[in-house]
Image 1 (spheres, rainbow, N blue to C red):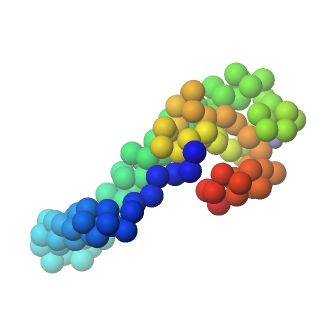
Image 2 (tube, rainbow, N blue to C red; image 1 turned 180 degrees about the horizontal axis):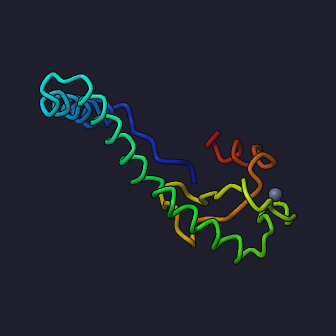
Length: 120
Ligand SMILES: [Zn+2]
C-alpha cells in the first residue's frame, strides 16, 4: 500500500495554515531568542519523527525480537542476516513499527523492493 499523501486541496486548506500556526507559536514561545527558537524547532522535529517511527530504543528492541522470530533470516531472500545493520522494514508505513507490521531484511540488498513499493 503506497503511503498516504496530501491532496493539493489538503495542502492549501489544512497543512499550510497549520504550519504557519506552528511557526508563529514557535516565534512567540521563543520571545526573539534565536537559540531557544532553534532548540524548540529541533525538539519538535525530533518528537514528530518519533510519533511516526517510534523511539530508537523501541525500534532496537523490536529488531532483536524480529531477529529471534525469523531465526536470523531475511524474509525477502531467506539468507542469514548480519548481526547488526539489518533493516527493520514496515509492511505499511502508516501502521508503524509494530511486531505485526515489520520484518527484518538485508539493508542494501533489497533497494529494488523499496523502489517497487514507492518509498525510495
Ligand atoms: Zn535478504
